Length: 136
Ligand SMILES: [Zn+2]
Image 1 (tube, rainbow, N blue to C red):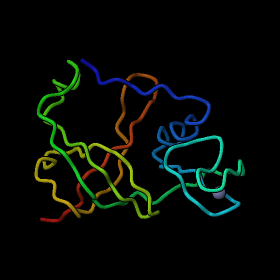
Image 2: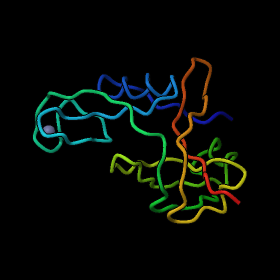
Image 3: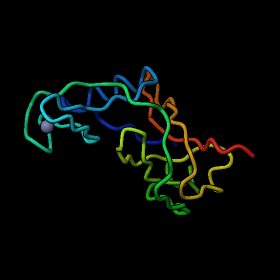
């Protein structure tokens, strides 16, 4: 069973468009220089609507994670065990991403990760994910 695909809305469409091109785009407020990870029509810090999208670096570090052994739905059960993580990306933003890759269950806090884009579904949709970049 295929994993679900998020439904973009007016605020999140640019984020998903960028992901489909292997880019991690985040909203930057031009009034106060805040970067925000949850796309909105205004800045969460100063309420300005002067927001621009900029590409972020594709590296981060695991801040916390949980290994899920029992997925909540059939699709996630088939995907289990999977690793749900909070990843600090270099922009000072924390994103919730899955750690993917054969070594995902060996994840440790502070492990460096690379943001990758996993194709999902048939319409060119891609989901940002994280892959450990620890050298062995
Ligand atoms: Zn602002």
